[in-house]
Amino acid sequence: MQILIVKSQRLLTLTHEGAVRLRARVALGAAPIGPKRREGDGRTPEGVYHICLCKENGKYGLSLGLDYPNADDARRAYGEGVIDADTLAAIRAAAREKRRPPWGTALGGEIYLHEGGAATDWTQGCVALESADMAVLFPLRTQIEAVEIRP
Figure (tube, rainbow, N blue to C red):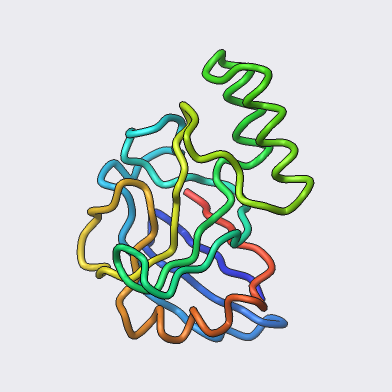
């Protein structure tokens, strides 16, 4: 299964072998245009991510944590002087080992797909869904191979 989120359309689509399993409206970070670059910028990341953490009782209910920042985010940030070599190495190691990356870096972290409503953009960079849509998505979490977020 794959998830595609198109930020400009505020749309999440879950597919399995080409068939659509779920289409859902989403809310994004309070500053939705452009990719996430730094902690606190209010933007939702863009790229391909994986689910690295699941919470049944997160701050906003059912929550699926994404492995942001990933190796691509870290490589770009290192080249821009946003993170140091140790942080780059730690994020790359997490990606290789398929585990949650460090979330306390200058890039930010703790990006989730979570409940909380999709009427308007309001998150700190997460992707928020209506509870009914997350109720469909959450039980399939172990089958989701990738979450692609596009502009």
